Length: 114
Length: 115
Image (cartoon, rainbow over all chains, first blue to last red; front, side, top):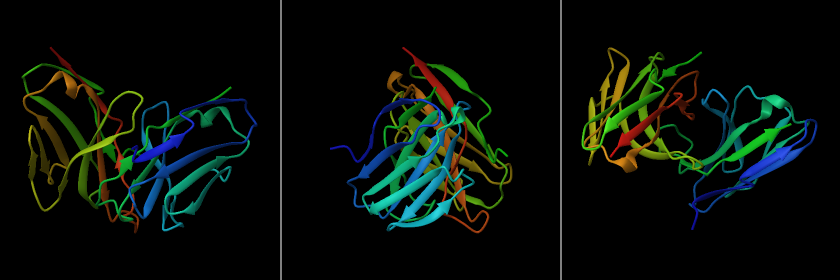
């Protein structure tokens, strides 16, 4: 059983479209995260939710909106996609909302905006 | 503003030898450090961590050393195996900017272990 799963794995779309990426964890963790790995290979935190409450919101355009319907799910919706949004997006989860514990990552979603 | 730096984008090592991956950080508020390993088309997986109250942590073939005064840590893999070939990310956490929730990652070092 996959601990942290993301769908889709690949997403190719046109500029201006709206798209969503889904994430689910079956680890019973309280905290979930979205990271972006851009072309320079940096993994940067975008958002974090703890028990469905937003606790980290980095400087991310408001075209990006996370939604956490329950503790096990954290989806990422992106409006009006731009070329610069092309990246690999990773979902992760951890037991506690703290950088002092291990985070478990999903396999990533490669988004290509044409 | 790169607070966690991995200055070697790649490293090539012979099987059986030691691999040493380096990481430097600039934020003195960081007090917990982690190493993650990433294979292609997969997410990063946790490898080993170290708290700033220690200067060494060992787990099997993997040892992490922390030099707080130099703001430097290193991951040693002994002996290196071909299956260790992956990208290794250094990450740091601490009460930075009032929040200890997040990890700050370096760019990663691609390790290739040649048979």
